[in-house]
Length: 355
Image (tube, rainbow, N blue to C red; front, side):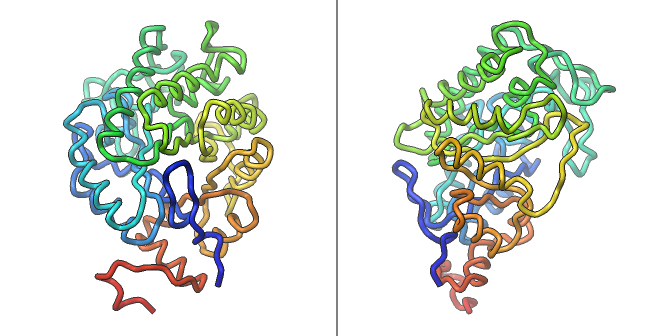
């Protein structure tokens, strides 16, 4: 059968063989920011499993920007080598390697999920966190340090430097992480940004850092390669960032040359109320795509081939990103093709299992 999910998509100089994207998922398995064989197998198996685009987990632009001590990083040149090897394998599987650059802000210095995810104090091997304002994500934790002007300039510079390394490592899609309550989202949301300078208060001021980071990334990113940005369309909390502001920001990002908005939601505050359910975030991607005229990616509790096919076929989004479902099934692309009766190429090593 003809499938929109398995139709190619060209963005600038890159052609994705299908609309299936492996969402950036933290593995909490790095040491000092360095990738290792776990990352090679994790990312490589999703490439051999048929996805068109593989986005590496939130990769920190600085040591203090890591969510956990186990996060990947691109703050020094030595971290490039292993990522280059991983990307070469991804390309060998006719998939495209992407990276999500991030700074966790006040949600940094946390233990891995299997260690409880708690905040790690400085005397326990953690580090001081930074944010737009000295207000913590949880009331009972040590508040972050409010960034001064030089601290903000360092964040912008760190994104530019990490982008330069990402180019050298061979990534072909760049995504800026401005969602899920991490640093850029902390500046966007009135629930975490209480500044009274040019980075706080009005919508124009709250988006300032995100736009500066976009410009810094563009200064080092190859102009022929796609630039994505992930946003939280709403905070799911009264008085927070909302879909109307997301549409407004997306219009500006389109004018600035961003190619695709990866539309997620939530993460800014602990008292959020998220109405979880299949496709619960897809309407946001649909609204931004239609009102802004920009390509979008849909995410969130999308688990079945027919579900993903409908999202693309009906024009709600241009890409579908899979996280937990791809953890359950590394061969997601191959499995979805079989479910939709689409004949796709399998790795020759696996062809004897093709039905």
